[in-house]
View 1 (cartoon, rainbow, N blue to C red):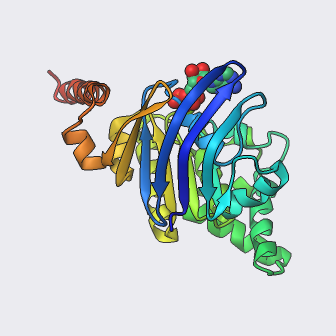
View 2 (view 1 turned 45 degrees about the vertical axis):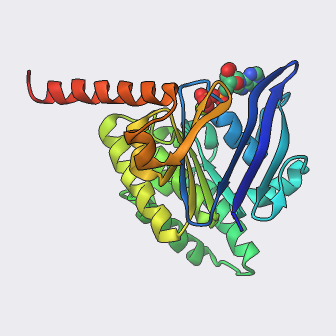
Amino acid sequence: MSLLSVSDLSVSAPGRELVHGVSFELAAGERLGLVGESGSGKSLTAMAIVGLLAPGLVADGSVVLDGHQVIGRPDREMTAMRGATAAVVFQDSRAALDPLMRLGDQLAAPIRRRARREGRRLSDSAMRDEQIRWLERVSIPEPARILRSWPHEVSGGQRQRFAIAMALSCAPRLLIADEPTTALDVSTQAEVLSMLDRLVKDEGLSLLFISHDLPVVSRVADRVLVMRKGRMVERGPTDRVFTEPQHDYTQGLVAAARRLQDALDGEGGGA
Ligand SMILES: Nc1ncnc2c1ncn2[C@@H]1O[C@H](COP(=O)(O)OP(=O)(O)O)[C@@H](O)[C@H]1O
Ligand SMILES: [Mg+2]
């Protein structure tokens, strides 16, 4: 059985449908990329899956996550499922963190939730060990200092690593990463991406990786879905879609990514 099964999902604002009849499956341990230009409906699709749509937006159709129907489920039940089943990392980790809470206290919350779920009691020192261990796993140097810091005191790259640690520390089965590296500079982007790649592998997670950036998606996803204007226009194994795109729109995306890569290579060569 699929870990996630989305069938004929639509998302509407009053008087306007924004996502139109999207369907796909995600198996346990699989890595799926969701690509498409800005505004194509990628984030709305992801938010509908975890029941986090903005007020005023309504999802229709079916989303079965780990055997549970998400559409129409009350918020308080979704809160329990998020974390345990699916965790999300956003583009802007600043939004995911509470600016008025030290990072250590923020990381303690998902660790405590997981322990409670597993019927474990955590002493203060066991909690601290887990906090440090998670920061080490996302390669944050000086973890003890970071735990005492406020969100605004750490760099964007470290904040994003921290957000990933928070998402994974409650032991989800599915990680949804929505443009997780888009706000970072190119070298930080590459580091965070390979770290994410490694953690997803180590934890045996399923991954739904969302990005407008084709080369980034091709590095982490086994399969891709291409969205345009709220519809799914192409899907298939990553290699096939990027080497032999069928749909005009995907052909355009691939050609644009190649031109950009050529331009960057040209600069590197000092031409
Ligand atoms: N809360 C909202 N109310 C009305 N329209 C929205 C809302 N959120 C997003 N949209 C619109 O839905 C479309 C898809 O948005 P989104 O899923 O965020 O795109 P993507 O993540 O692919 O860039 C866009 O046209 C966007 O303007
Ligand atoms: Mg988006």
